[in-house]
Image 1: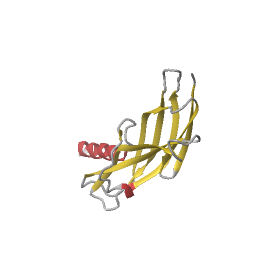
Image 2 (image 1 turned 90 degrees about the vertical axis):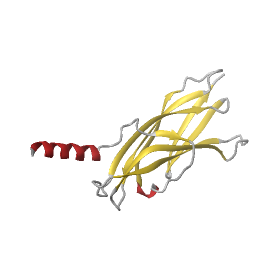
Image 3 (image 1 turned 180 degrees about the vertical axis):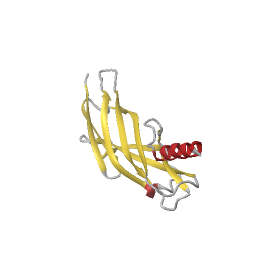
Image 4 (image 1 turned 135 degrees about the vertical axis):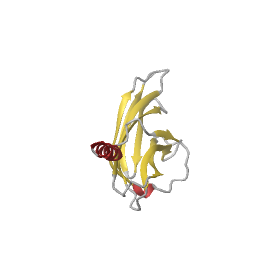
Length: 159
């Protein structure tokens, strides 16, 4: 009896545990995303981790951290975030002198059939590294956007 209770307790703890920080991959392709209503983002932060830019180096690294919950009120289908879609573009245009690189992020919610899931909120905590490329000498501005939240990053490209 104690053995069964221990197994049940471990299963409940694992079911409620946040996703490991390295559990989400980055994708650049759109797809069938029918479960996005299950997503609530509570935290979003972008941090520069490597910006040793120079004449021959135009690539920098940032670390993106996203937290939140996923819930499926219907139950029986347990939601999880396994990928983050990333899309880049220039605003207002690629030819504008005051252009800013806009990096849009969308955590992708997927679901697995799980009869033990009862529709409770499941926390997630995702951290991933992302490469940025500068696009001119001097200040390069980037705006990361996630569900209406914005984080601004500036990189200095020197000769």
